[in-house]
Length: 494
Image (cartoon, rainbow, N blue to C red; front, side, top):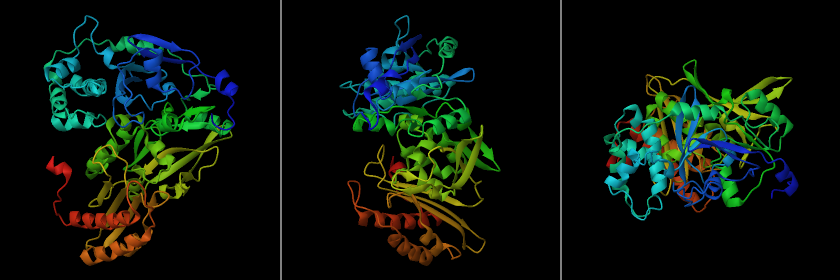
């Protein structure tokens, strides 16, 4: 129990939970705020096909698919149920592996493909793979798209097979279109979703629909835990056993769920998922696609939000170095006299220390704003981690370079993660490059500055010396890429 939270306080105000499962509305009374969706499925609904493998969103054994109304259609997302707070699923539809079998007993294409390709061994991870494939089927195959190996690997990126059966599973993914399409009644599901009322405004788990309502609640309850996807807060629950008296969920706020083009740049709402946000970034800067796919597995990107990743302030968060390099600004909002007041600052100025920021008690991060891409500019982001996929960065570096007609550095911005208590901007290195001719000598001089600019720590992921050396090497790699040198990467070898 968290300090200051009495058992009575945590019990009396517990809200009810409702979601659609197997074409009926499931209603559970007084569900504890810290209860995960996985616990609800296994312990309350006896849906034991959904497995707990790691309880931290790494292995994918717990993957389920959520359906959410988006206009007149359903949007499907595969997510990790082990770190998703159950109340974050209020008003949605949930599918688990047991739900794939059709009402007449026939197999879903996902089941048929896995069976035909012999794509299961011990079977523990299979329900999670099946649900990732179900998400792929609903979002791509059902729309007439053909699944190739690259698409299969992307959609299975959050699932681990301990028996090393990936080839057969990928073959199953690529064959999903070979089977008859099942009947679906999305209209009935949407009608059920519309019958579920939202949580009351004074609920211990609040899901406000407007930004003003959210900010008003924030001012009234500054100690409430804010969630924006639960991918980190879920870990606090499963690994640190934290408890919360009140939770403010930002993900239902309409104004925070949009991506807008403003003066050629982007304005991304804080509640936009990482998957949607990075897709928009990759449209503006196509070279970021490889970095985007390495950010995390798809179930994490489907649940986590850009605003949550930024506000969390982890020094090894991957979004911030890139966004700093892109000269991102954050818009902070608060309720004032029945209206919304905002202030804007550079992203790197948001942080005051390790996992600390300069937001007032009644403020929340509302939008991230990025300037328009400049013709001819180079943008790269590099992630260094022990594993190639699904791993936390030891070092992350983002670089944005623009040269003038004489090959002098007209603009340079560099963001770094994993080398200080906060995500940081490499201002000394930028100063060493600005206005200089972009050549090998300039880069080598800047490397020397970059090696001395930060004082990283040694921890389980990397030593301080390794981190410094990697920073310099990544700047050298960036220089080589600007000179057209093709580099050997694991992605290229694949």
